[in-house]
Length: 267
Image (tube, rainbow, N blue to C red; front, side, top):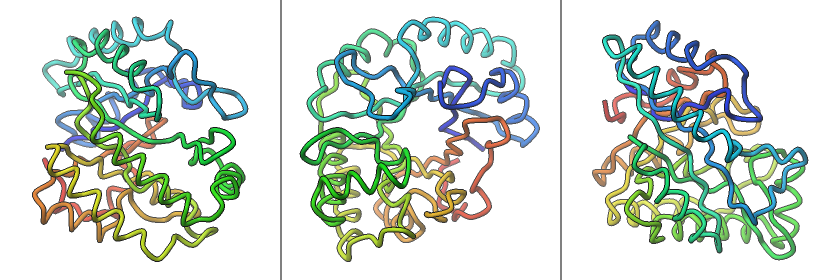
């Protein structure tokens, strides 16, 4: 069993629990491999739109992050396979900055995720999963919920097709994150068609999907990213689904695993 999406104490909005605690809990759950995927530093010229500007790890911490995980690999080499990675943000217009980061740190990466958190409908940037209030602001800036979803899936497609160099992550993170507040704001009727269309791009690009359990724990979502219908469709197309807890605390390991279709998971 593998958990391919785990955060760490290097995440400013996460837990301060030591990395070792995540590893020991993973072993206790019977995992054979885990991937640490801390939020990669945002491009230097990009202004983080969340109030505390704490969406990603600091650039000055990257070397320590790599060093500490490398040491953990050695310490636990006989008990569990530990992989070093990042959750890399695709931000439209900042592709070259992202490629520069990947060119520099890619040689250290065993596995990574490419995600979309930030959208700029018209006036400004928003982190769409930060809060219900920020999601509403993004929706109003976009002009409608339909326009916001369209922008999200357009950006997802750009991320999958972007040339980010030889170390581009090949797994799409939580592809339906836009639905985090779906119980407050009804998704547009055609969202499923856009998601299904995106799967064809994922397949053509030879990418995989993060089958993310975190959404099952969010009060206004209550489903995995992607939900069962899309996960089944992805599997039918031959796209691998890698379970990810998206844990930001050791206790978050395994979250949502009991609510997703485990037979779809690539072991």
